[in-house]
Structures are given as structure tokens and as C-alpha cells.
Image (cartoon, rainbow over all chains, first blue to last red; front, side):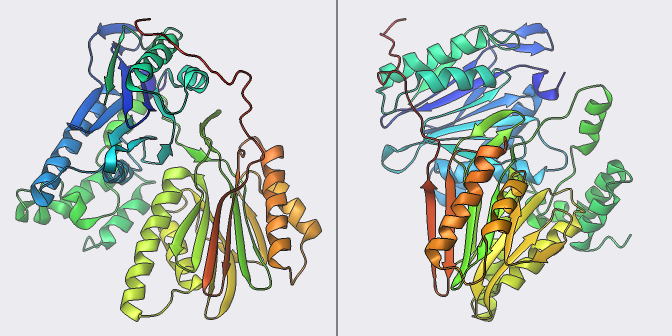
Length: 189
Length: 285
């Protein structure tokens, strides 16, 4: 079993018309045994910026705490919130710093930039950024999520339609993955 | 061991082969003075830069318990460069793979180094991006310091010494090209730090397919259009014959005083929808 499959996770983010949606599953497991069914994987950094962390749960929580710390320092110094592109570079740098002893975590970053333009990106565990204009996926269910999103995604969806689409994509993919499931959390901004 | 200043990072990385634990311990030791001085800043690693080996011991323990290591985002790639009569043309495909899955269908592999120098990267995606960004910042500082346009050999030396320092563990294979006061230059840089200087070059998993095209059709004194056409053919040959390369073709033409970045110059793999309507879900499903 790989380190990424120890806890199990599924994360997806999609872009709509001046909005974005980010969704995750709720299961926390220890290999094949379920330990919690309400585990939070998506965290709010500020009103227009959310980050989801898949992979090893302990690294996800540690990384989240470090990111919140850096963002709070940034807010004190700059007296404003961080833009999503800047935040993505920050996460990438923090992950690459641990290149030879990495955090076993794949983040999905979703936010609204200037003029409410939606921004999503994902990274591998050492910080290789992957910007996308439509959707990004991460976690153990990522292969089926790729398939579901490719077929269900349409550009410029309104928030209600985006919510439905991302939920259906998430639910159908986690149904095909034993390590993730137990419902989902969806945030639409 | 001579644990003073920035030399410590490099010493530790060479010792990594022997024991990451010793290296991690040494690194922590040499950081002590800085930690005491800046009490408020927990993230003191940023004051010195470079890599931090904190989690190495924990990760090694996990591996010993039988958990397999993670796979990183690679750019199994076709990257090419050639020198034509007025300058240099660089080309790359746009597929990024994670194991057997295509993670990014349209990623950028031609990285900016300086206004007159661009670099294509193959290998682990995070390594190519980080190393080109770092050296690009280095070059900018050097330009401010010397008030001159950057030379390709400067970038070459900075890149090869960085890669050699990490003994190939930073797995980035690069094709560096640019035009400076001494003329057009094209170099290849291998992950262990060796370099070649050539009139045409290919790297990546699709390099054999692309090299076949170059070897048969390249000649000196190509015009711009002939050069772009040849680069496109070489990349397409990599895209269609190599599984690790795919999607679109990116081209960058650099001439004296000017550069043209043609992103998605060719799209030989468009998405053909069977049903243009797609799926739609009514509310409350």
C-alpha cells in the first residue's frame, strides 16, 4: 500500500461563471478500516480562498497549520488578504523545501482573484503546480474523478448547476473507490 | 565537516547517501544560533533558503514499515532546440504525467530565464520549475549587478553547478537556448550536471523520435519558417510515437533583441465531442 492510500481521500475543484466549487469526501481510514466519517479536508484561508489537502491526514493537518500561520503573518504585514496565485506559489515553495523528505499531501487550491475571476490549481507532493482552466482532482479516487469530470464538465456554469455537477462527479467517483466515501462536503463560492 | 554558512547545506546533501539522520541532525545543529535570535519566527528555515531535511527520518521509518513512496509529477516529454540563421528555436510538447495518468493536458514546459534566454525542462516537474525559477532570479540579480544583458553561458554554469551539487537527485534535464552579444547558443544539461553544446538537441522520453527527424532534415542556415516547421515536425513525431508526450506544441523563437513565445502553436489533438450538449443535472438530484 502506498503512503497516499493510508488514509484515503478524494478532492475535486471546478471553475464556473465567476464562481468556483471545491468538494471532498468525508471518510478517514486507517488502511481498510474506517475511523471517522466526518473528516474535514477543505479549509478556509480567507473568504475567497479555500485549500483542500488530500493524502496522509497528519501531513494535511500540519501543512494546514503552517499555511494559516504564513497567511496570518502576510495579513499583518500587508494588511490585506493573499491572492490565490500568490498563495499557490507559497504552498509550492513550502512543499518544494521538503523535496527530499516530502509532506505526503496533494493540495487543491481554489479561490477568487481580482474581479472575482476564479482560480484553481493542484500540486503533487513536492510542489509542481498544475494550473487548469476547468477542473482539478486529487486523492485516491483521482483516476475515476478525472473520467467523471472530463465528461460532466461544461464551461461557464452557474453556481447551482456547478454544485450539482461537482457533487455528481464526486459521488460517482468515490463509489468506485473503497478508500474514500461516506458522503461529501461541497463549498461553492 | 566545516559546518559554516551556506556550505552546510551542500555538505549535508552529499552525506545524504550515507545517512539522512546524520545530515538532518547536523543541519539542525547549525541552525541553532539563528533560531534563538529570531524568536517570533518559527519558520527559521526561510532565513537561509535551500532544502530542509526535517522529515527524512520519519519518511524513512514509514518506508521501512512497508509503505511505498509516492510518485511525483513527471514531464515524460519531448523537448527540442535548434539554431537557425538568426537565432534559436525551442519547442516542447504539453503533457504532464503522474504514473500512467495524464495529470495536465496543457502544461508549460518552456520556462523563462531572461528576456533573451529560455529553457525547456524534462524530468520531475517540481524540479524543473524550481531550478529554472531560482536560476532566473539569480540572473536578474546578476543583471542588476553588472548592468548588462545576461549571457547563455552564465545561465548554463549556474544550472550545471546547482544540479551537480545535488548529484542528480534534483532530476531535471534541460535544453537551454538564447541569443546574447556573442551570438546564438544552444545547450543541453543532464540531471547529474554534464552539459553539451550543439546546433540541434532533443531531450526527454520522446527524444529519440524527435532526433530522428532532426538528423534527417537539419541543415545549416535554416530560415525562420523552415526552422519552426522542422521543430513542429520533431515535436509531433514525439507526440505521436511516445506515450509520455502528447497534446499540443509550444514554440519559442529567440532572435537578437526579440523573442516570440508561440503557446499552443499547433493543436494536433483537439477534443472531439460526441454530444455537444454534454450532461446536465436538474436541481435536487
